[in-house]
Every structure is written in structure tokens, then in C-alpha cells.
Image 1 (cartoon, rainbow, N blue to C red):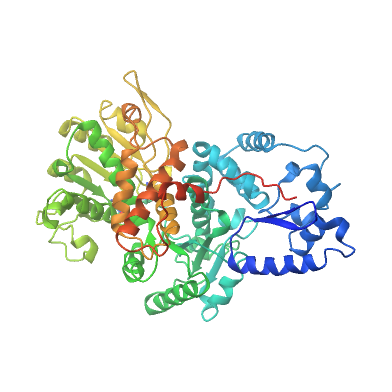
Image 2: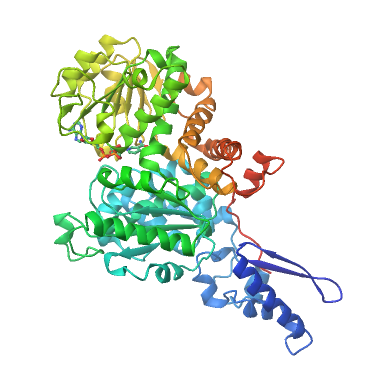
Length: 595
Ligand code: NAD
């Protein structure tokens, strides 16, 4: 946390701090001045230990139990001596590399993914530096454990695998005291909040307070994929009740056992929450996560100009999908304006993606109405058409003047789309007849099976290649192993918003943007698509390999911040070298020397 450097005359010449929180800094400097006054006192011989104690830096067993500072067996001899750790650790000092070996050995021998998840989350509770180092360096192996698909199962079992609380829970009982509750969080300079009300967790539905696994996991990805320091982030769950009968009857459920607040009571609660955030964490960007679509669109509309916020399910997914389309068109050589997109599912992900595609089509010269003609939807009731009177406002924009078709396979036959995009959360809807029809209609059909977790995917990678004779250009929300078909190896990259939100968040934080705009997501999609190599495309990957994610996030962050500066939405001066400045903000999890 700090390092004090003395000169030969015993004067403090330097103090390095890790966390740049103004309150902490002034408190820290007061203590330093006091310590200086005491320098010749009885503590003089033991000055570093004295500093450690005076500055509130944990020592002894408290240090080992503090996950932000704990290094476990990697504490050096000198640290063990000065910080009161002698005897509390086994004698061998290990390197971080050796600790990584131990963690990987342990995690890999766990019998299933949920056990791996529990193990990794426990590591996060013990030693954050080691946890983030491993997640960063082994992102391909770790992302499916700490995020989709395993996090879905973890949320479904949250109350049963619960060990330690993480993040802030604000429940319906907390009306009138939200600022105080936020102030209980140990870090004061929060720059990014991921908040859910747990009503639409992945494609799994209402998991109430058990949805907390999602903001926790997402913020771990912000740190691993974009280097946003974990002390700057805060996961929040708004517990407004649940409609999930299983949870209401489960003695181990961790949330309020009541039906969800709705209507004005819900809106007033959320408004109070945002006022509290503005008061306590005025510099925070807020990411809405996994709200049901009855609230998601409304809340985004209500708050997007008032606060720096975005909805990843709507806007992040949209940018990832558009980037995937740009990549696919590099393979087919087609133009965006020649495509017909048929979405399965007309919720946040689908409508968000269509809105961004419409913007991209309009940029190529089409009117809004012409652009919308390229996007068609089938929802749980059938084709979205004008004659359906029950459609919500958001869907209505895409209701075409056409005969109603009750099911997806018939819609594929009738509309002859170039691309099908699965965002229904319903498994196996891209059936053999659907994929065979797509292969008959198109030389290279675009098949995006984006629903999560894996159990909800519209089709697997193997099905997509097998039923289109290896001609599908495929991507999926959850990861699939490479597939060998017709002697060719296909490596389908995950079509996931993890390629987008960390970079957008970092860019918005870096320039302290007042708002996050749709234009920022458009440039994020273009930047992502520009980073896909011909070699990636050759093997069927529409997205870059995950190990390049930090490079991708840095590029997206730069592009997003450029938009903020161009549109006068940034609130700090533009650094001369923006890309270098953004890279300098990215936290690289390494042990610091404490003494
Ligand atoms: P949502 O609840 O807002 O929308 C789901 C939509 O699917 C609704 O329009 C619903 O009517 C429709 N639907 C349900 N059953 C259907 C059926 N049998 N046939 C046709 N349509 C049906 O959810 P969402 O936020 O849009 O997310 C949908 C899915 O997309 C989820 O599984 C989610 O995990 C996934 N998703 C993936 C990513 C990614 O990065 N890959 C990002 C966001 C969401």
C-alpha cells in the first residue's frame, strides 16, 4: 500500500502510494507529519514498523487475512520481519510463479466447474493479487469458470455455496438509509459499479439476491480484461424481492422472502439508489446488469443522460454482435446493406443489437425505415408484425407490414435471412431443419447462437457446422471446443460482450465521461472488428483470441475516450498521448514490496 524511503539523514524523501484516494491521502499525510515529529522518539530504531502501525497498514495475522495486501507464502524475509509475520507462515518464501503453479494444480483437479468456481472465489477472498494475476494470464481457462457459463450455475446455487458476502446488498428494507449503507464499503473512490436487481440473470430468469454472482464476476473481468483496479469497483445487488417460487421456499435463500416491488415503489427505490450513488460515489460509472426487460429499457432511457451509465445487456451485446457481423462480412465479402437479419428473441440483447445495426446501416446511407427493413424478429409468440396489437414500444419499431408467422422455422423459409441471431435464452431452437434451410438459402449462412449459459445455446458449434456442411459462419455466447468437420478444424470464438464492456468502461473512466453514448458502442464495435486477423477469420473465429483481450480493451478505451473528447463529454483535459495514458491506468496484478 505504501513505501517510505528515507535518505541517509533519516529524512523521509519519498512515499509511494498505491491507492489515490484524496481522503486517504490527506489522512496519510497527517499521520506522516505526526510520525516525523516523533522520529527521534523511542520508535526511532524501528521506524518502518512504526510507520506500518501508525498508517493503519495491517500487520501480523491481520495482514495475512487482508485479501488486498496478502501475499501468502510470497512475503519476503524482510516483510516477515518488519510486519510481524514470523512464525505465521511456513519458512519457505515462494515466488508468485510457484504460487500460480499451486493454484492451477488445485483448480485443475477439482471434479467439476462449480467446485473450480468455489475454489477461485475463495482465492479472491484470500489473495486478490494472485487471483487477478491468474485470471489475467489464464483468461481462456478462467473466464468460463468465473463467468459464463459456470457463474450461471453458481447463481442458481448461490445460497447453498455461500461462504462470504461480496459487494453491497441493498434491500427493499433499506429505503431512507442508502447513502449510509454505501459508506460502509471500505473503499471510498469508486469509479465503476455493476448493479443488478437479479430479475433476468443470464438466460436463467429471476434469481433475486442470488444474482450477486453476476456483478462480482463481471467486475473481476473488468480487472482482468481492462486492468481497472479492483479497489475502484463495487458490485451491488438491489434486492426488491423475487417471483421465483423455489427461492421463496428455500431455507438457504439469501434474499428477502417477498414478492418483487413493482410500479412506483420500484421506481422510487431505484431513484433513491441513484441519488445515493451520486452523493457517495460521484465519480462512478454505473453499469446496469441483468435487469428484466420491463425495467431495463426504461431505466436506461431515464438515467442515460443524467448519469454516466450504460446497460451491457442492451448496448454491450449490441456492439459485440455488430463486431461479429463486420468480421463475418470480411469472410463473405458481403455488404451490411445486403444482409437480412432474423433475430430469435426480441428482448434486450436482440433489440439493442438491431438498434446498433440500424445506426450502422444509416451511416451507410439508408433511412431509419429502410435500415429497419433489414432486421426481423421472432419472439415467444411468433413473428413480430404490425397486426400484433400487444407489442411493446421497443418491439413495435421492428413490426413489419407482413403476414404473421407463428414459428421460427417457417419464418426462416419465408424471409430467407442471410443471418440468424439467437438471443432467446431458449435452448436448441436452431434445429437441424432450420440450419439446413439456412445452408440451402445461403452459400455462407451467418449463425450467431448468443444465448447463455451453454445449456441455453440455440445450437452447438458442432451442430452448426454439421448441419450446414461446414459452411456456417458461427459464433456463440458460451465457449465451445474446436470442431473438426470435413477435415477442417473450426475454432469458434466466443461472441461475448466481454470484448466490449471492459474497454468501454475503461475509456469512460479515463476521461471521466459525463455520459456513455451509442456512438461509443459503435466505435467500440468497429475497433474490435479491426483487431481480428485474417488468420483468426481463416479458422472461423469472428473475435480475437481471448489472450489479446487487454490489447483490445485498451484500443476500445482509447476510441471511446476520443468520442468523449470530440463530443465535449469528457471532464478532464485530454492527455497528449491518449493511448499511452490509457495503458498507464491499467493495473497489472503484481506483488508490491511493502518495506
Ligand atoms: P430478454 O429476456 O430481454 O429477452 C428474451 C427474448 O426471447 C424475449 O423477447 C422473449 O420473448 C424471447 N423468447 C423467449 N422464448 C422464446 C421462444 N421460445 N422463441 C422465440 N423467442 C423467445 O433477454 P436478453 O437480455 O435479450 O437475453 C437473451 C439471451 O441472450 C440470454 O440467454 C442471454 O444470456 C443472452 N445474452 C448473451 C450475450 C452475449 O454476450 N453472448 C449478451 C447478452 C445476452
